[in-house]
Image (cartoon, rainbow, N blue to C red; front, top):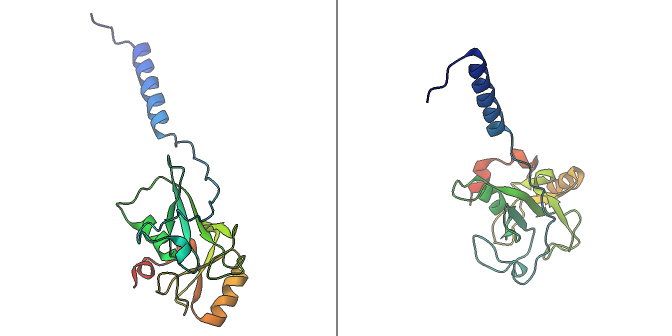
Length: 171
């Protein structure tokens, strides 16, 4: 059976193709970020497989779409590395780091001292040695607190998007 090609059927086909194209290009609904979780005895670092409570300093957590538990990190540089490595999942719904300006303890950051990683200020290239025994980025929720830390410990203050990739990979 043949259908006649008329201006009306041509227009209907073009409209259908346009609608399908727009539907394919419509962005997927943004999955809301889950709230940060507190570190428990079960929290193990993604790269080192070590328990987070055994390490001093700021830590991080990343939530992946479809998973209820975060991926844990014993060092802040590891959080950045995870987002840069092509083999790691990219369906990230939330990234949190300890806000060291809110924490009274540097050994074990306080409960609730979390900030969305993309909102934090980071002191990099300072004399600070993190939980894995190497120089690490130090996150702060307030730029003034980061500036004060950098004045005492050296380094420079940068936003999340301005942390250089070469800094992340430097040992």
